[in-house]
Image (cartoon, protein in one colour):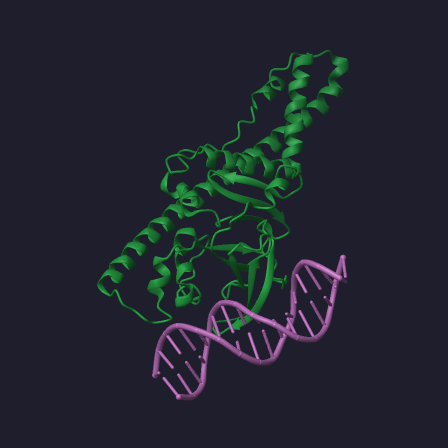
Length: 308
DNA sequence: CGACTTTGACCTGCGC
DNA sequence: GCGCAGGTCAAAGTCG
């Protein structure tokens, strides 16, 4: 478990200042009523703190499980890739359009997020000769969770796209939309967007090629202050958003491969990752009214202590 | 009026 | 060669 050992997600809420209440000096009889109220508040605060601590512990456990799953999946992926390479070396010529071995050796798997789609999509394996130059181009796949009721195949990645076609493919009843980057007329990047056949709330966006211009949204990101924030996850650019269906992390995998894969290659350099987690946790906690209440109680307790 | 979307037609590659 | 399937084109429609 490489990350949990490096990430200390527990929150040092410094609950000790409240202990002054236990050792509060004896008060005159006329303040007995006041003490009762204080005692009640103290009990309530302690309960609140216990609850928040328990929640914190739960979150830490959850994170541990997530990291374990990630490592497991990564190992499986590496194993799978090496196996496929062996197969390809043994059978170098395969003209099957539906061949899965081609798709498994291209860049897709390196950039995959979420569950790997072992079934279906063959769009990357069926490259035409006139697109032979594009085979070399970067191909990445991004999974984005959206509202299942949302029928628009829009993946907000900061770039400007122009839809030029839509097609219903054989293996997926949901239509596939074809987009071209319209920010720069010379930009060769294309994008295919289709809902996952397994989970229709997940939209799969496949990017082909590299943008020959900067991300037009990057200027805006510096002034972003809403619920949508753009962060940099190490060298992996990503954006987070909180929706009714829960938080969504979208990785911008259109960046050059060496940049996006550097995280995988250097799991022993998790500082930006840790920073990202801290930011995420801080963001989540500041949105939690219970946490705010507990924090306010802790701070007011500290003030009371200094006043005495 | 320009930019964008929709959608049917067309092109091309692949398998049989 | 034919049919199928994915990808692209371009005219028509829509919207701000």
